[in-house]
Image 1 (cartoon, rainbow, N blue to C red):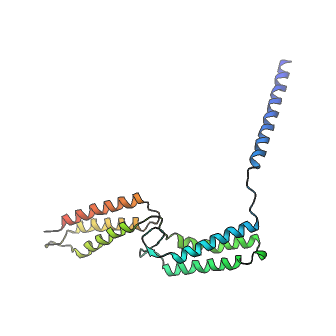
Image 2: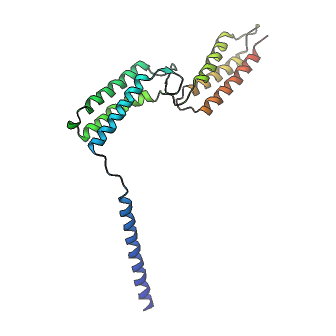
Length: 204
């Protein structure tokens, strides 16, 4: 008899737990945001497109935050800027007829902007690399003006290779759009040390 009562008690507890879990699920479901309306989607895309058009038109080539990185390995700035602007303007034209838009058109807008937007924005610097670039320019000038040899003012092959490697490493950091201020500063310090070592190796 006690065993039967225990089974009944456990069953009741299980049912109550199930009700609690169900109530929790229903409570969580009520917190799920409602899907965006077509008007909201259009407004969101319009805001994004207009913001990107303004940003792309204002972007210049350089090494400051928000600049298009100026390293030689990057694709042409003019080409990437033009391609992205063409896509943005096409998206703006499509969004200018809100009464005729469908969810398929919203997906179309996202699709037409994805590739050119990624190609352009992956070249935009997130941190200031100007100081590092200045150090690199100075190092390049010294390296290119110092010959390898045994005469006065020249350096050994090993010293030249070591300095060239240090410059290349610094350029890699400079060309990395998301290289942080700390990473940039470390690269500057490392290159400065390599530069001094190179200067010390010049035959007097």
